[in-house]
Image (cartoon, rainbow, N blue to C red; front, side):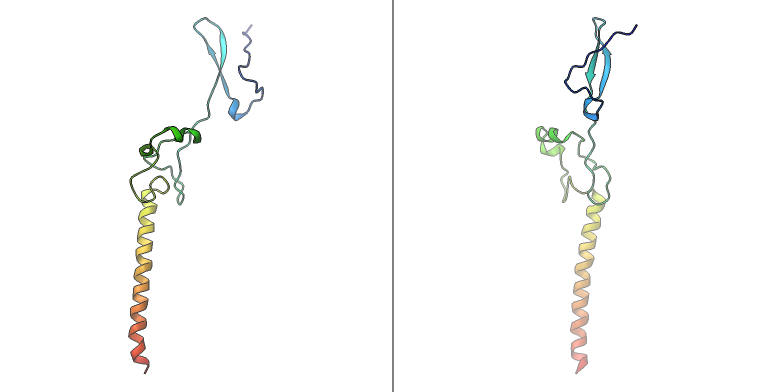
Length: 114
C-alpha cells in the first residue's frame, strides 16, 4: 500500500497557490514539496507581446533585482516594445508635419481672398 503523505502547510485546499508534488527523500520517505507559481513576463501595453530584455519574475521579486534587468535603455523601455515605440515616434512626427502643412496652406489662402 502507498505511504501516506501529510501536508506541510495549513491550507488543505487544492488551490493554485497550494500546488504540491510528492517527492521521495534520500531516506525513502515521501513528502510534499510546495510548488511556487510560475512567473510571467511583462507585456507591451500596446500590442501585448512579452517584452524582450526584461526578465520574468513574480511581482515581489522585482524589488530585489537591479534596474538593468527590469528595463531596456530606450524611451518607454520596460513598458512598450521597440516596434510600438517606433510607431509612436512616427505618428507624432506625422501629426506635427500635418500641423505645419495646415498652417502653410492657411497662410497661402489668406492673401488670395481679397
